[in-house]
Length: 214
Image (cartoon, rainbow, N blue to C red; front, side):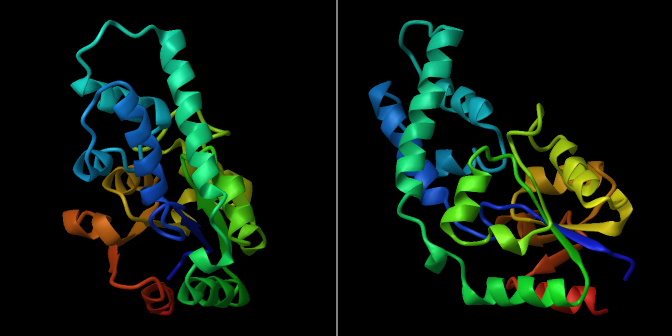
């Protein structure tokens, strides 16, 4: 294999914050008298906060909401979400994940995060994962979220690696599209394996080692 670096999505790959996003969005949806289910929440995977709000508002039947009010709602949702994230700690990252990351570093691979989340740094800090990566590209550095390839291209830039030398690990179909658009191969895990569009499929996180050792 020619890969020199591995770029990881965060939510759904290294940590699982869906339950916190769901609770925060549901609280806002209830305030707006909008029905919001876990199935609705699945549509928000891998998309930006602003785009997520627009999806939720598809079921809204009240008075028109101004752009200023939407920004206010987005801040309100994020404040609620960050309160929930405050409960996260080291135990929210499986030992298998930590061991795999450690083995990859020892084998000489450069590691990065490529996430649309603007809370990436906070999540890494809470889970004690910050030092596991050589670079972090997140929602604070980009203007276009997945399926646009910007965040993965930014990660490769920070790693000083060519896109073709990077392997992406993703759990969302939008992330698979973004990685391919960036000129990178993709190892899918979780929900992203269903589309069978990725170059590899991981049943468990540590399967990544087998792919890189081929």
